[in-house]
Each structure stands twice: as C-alpha cells, then as structure tokens.
Image (cartoon, rainbow over all chains, first blue to last red; front, side, top):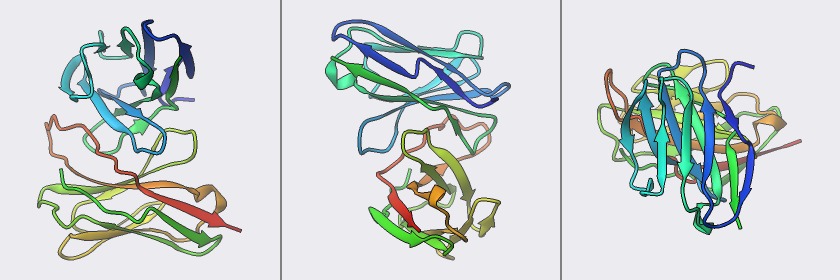
Length: 112
Length: 114
C-alpha cells in the first residue's frame, strides 16, 4: 500500500503524559498537513509543511503541541502534558501540489 | 475562505443518482470548490474540485452554477459503499500559495439504502 500511513492507530494515555504520533506521507509528496477531528465534527486544520518548512499553524496548535518534518519526509506530532480535551482523531494528509490532499487512516487518541 | 452550507443529511436508493447540494454565496473569484467524503472510521477522501466549469471524473460530476454561488456533486449510480459524510469546501488555491488548509464544516451524511 503506497498511501499515507500513520502510527499508532490507537493511543490511550493518562492525563499529563506526553504522546507522539508519526505520519509517513506518500513518497515524493512535498506537502504535509495535520488535522484533528472530534466526534460529530469535520476535521480541523492544525498545521502545514512544505518540505521541511512549517508554513502555517492554526491557533488550535497550543504551546503543548509541536510538529516537525525534519528531512521533508515523515512528520511527527507531539502533545505534551495531555488533557482530556485532546482526545480526538489526529489525521495526516499529503499532497503533491495545490489541490487534492490524500489522508491517512488517523490516530485515535484517548486521554483518561 | 468562503463559508459553505450543506444539508445535514440526505438519502438515496442504490443505483439512483445522488445529488448533493452546496451553497457558497460568498465565494471569491479565485476560490475553488472541493468535495471530499469520509466513510465511517476512515480518513477523508478527495473526490473532485472545480473553479468555474463543470468537472467529471471516475467518481463523480461537479456542477457549478454560472454565478458560482452554489454547486452540486452528482454520484451517478450510488452504491451502498457511497454511504459517507460529504464535505463541500471552498478554498483559495494558487501556485506558490501557502494557504494549504482545508476548512471542513459538518458536511452532509449521505445514506444509500438497498
């Protein structure tokens, strides 16, 4: 399968712990996006990379959130000191150009 | 980016055409219309996009009104696997643009019944 992959698919953590998610985009896609989706809502944009440069960040991305794409390939999203409100599906997407975005299956985070 | 309005739910008989409407009355001249869908427990899937002209691909057709204030996504022969939430999004897209984000609303839940 050459689609976008995300790891892990599910994560359960206790409040206050740090978590890190990984996204592997489709090969040679230079654009990478992170979104968050809560139950009953559409995905909400978090951040956007073009190659290794983080070009856009949402106000949703508080100081506890950090995203990296060190070599312009895979990306990581870290949440520090998790809160129950962080429970959501975290979606990654990649794109070769300005139009269609290809989404991964997501990582479901549950903070207890 | 302009806001879109979609009905919360629709249903359709299998084999019939599904016509999903979207209002985007504040759309600007340089904003494209995109459609994505999300099948339960999966990531969103790109369907189609357009600027002014009607577009067709292997999944669907997109009809944009002449004033561009509304559009319709047409699934010509709906199947049970087309049951999903369909999102209509308008967004600026231009070469070199850093405006990468997509604004998803709540979309339309399409249920295809046998």
